[in-house]
Image 1 (cartoon, rainbow, N blue to C red):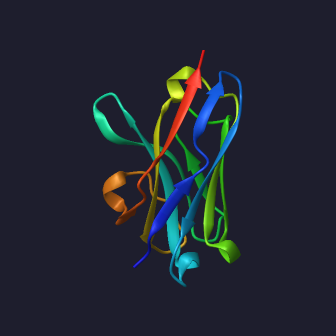
Image 2 (cartoon, helix red, strand yellow):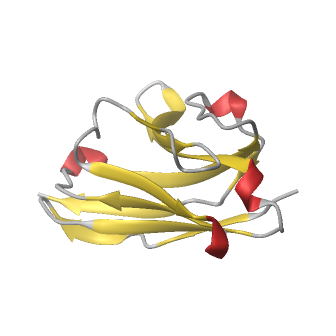
Length: 125
């Protein structure tokens, strides 16, 4: 069992940066693959980025590739999403997700069993 709490959202101008954090409870964080999702037209939860439990493998949606960076600190039981070059279309509630796994990443929301409450990101033009 793991509980997730996101933070770091806010209001930023286009071109700016934010870093989201997702703090996990529990003592086995380093056995969980992690992901970030946001709503999109026609999708309740659209894939943004994912990372394996070791941090050695990552994946990004095409829309954020080169602008967002996912990372994790297993000692702090925290996963991060560094968002640079933000655009108005990045405005959304961002959700952190976790699943027990081998050393791989996962890009579909149905593959995750645990979700945070979300943090709002608003990008003004």
